[in-house]
Image (cartoon, helix red, strand yellow):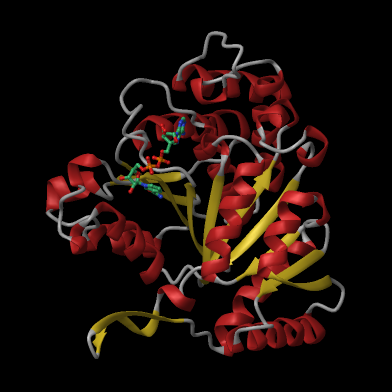
Length: 368
Ligand code: NAD
């Protein structure tokens, strides 16, 4: 069988720095676990613009469609802030998401015990937290037509349209139910069915998909505003949360803060299954290119490393190896290793990006 294939798009700012640490894990997988990835590297974002005048070259897009998974670092930076909207670094990422039709965005919020003090919430509220937010990513109010700023009479109106088809709701619901079956088997669907017709349809379709295809999964529904309150009141009541693009954007950021640092948060965006049964997939840390610390060896590589762990689990069926990487991260944190973003108010000496990567490799060796 062909080796699993990976396209690495390290991007801009700290992207290449954190990706260098993922490459150490990829090499470790080959040397110690006998899993060799066919790795191709290419440009995205500002670095692609510098070379090609576009934030994603057509050839790169074609490669992304062929591989088993894409792993992305981060895009953007002040150098590109004044570019035309159509060639801004972020457009490269949006093009990938759109053309690969990555409709299901998985954002885990997991609190490592060693970092529980970092959360703005009480330790007992977040310690051991492990929830997954599934956000619909390719439809809803960010894409619906009509949209724009128009003039009506003597004033301007800004218009965006929330629009969901049954099939768009059903496919993201399925991905949430499938995930729940591999976790604690619970899904909470969030919308605003009390005030939005699209919310009424969302609730109906999620319920129908559940009753017909996933009756074994516990399903509940919640209004999204209550969901936001519940997330900070007692987040451990949730397992998988499924919600639309707009509410998902907000709720996943809210859940992210439960865990402490942006440098710890991975994500996956999944699409329909390809011919080999694997879903189209893009894995990336939640954080951006962090221009304020780029090139200084200060970035925390854990979000990117945990994104690769998600690739092992969801694209390559290597759940045990994914768990190993997560355990290694937990061990390194428990041993007190901290990049600068994880230093508490008491200070201490932070380790560098590459020292963190090396510590995780050492922990992987020890676990094996
Ligand atoms: P950011 O996530 O880059 O940084 C926010 C803050 O968090 C900064 O202080 C940064 O130093 C810190 N930070 C982020 N990641 C870190 C890590 N791994 N380790 C340690 N500290 C980390 O967000 P921003 O400053 O709003 O945006 C910077 C650039 O990144 C902008 O051009 C923005 O458009 C882009 N951006 C890209 C993505 C993406 O590629 N998916 C996401 C968000 C922002």
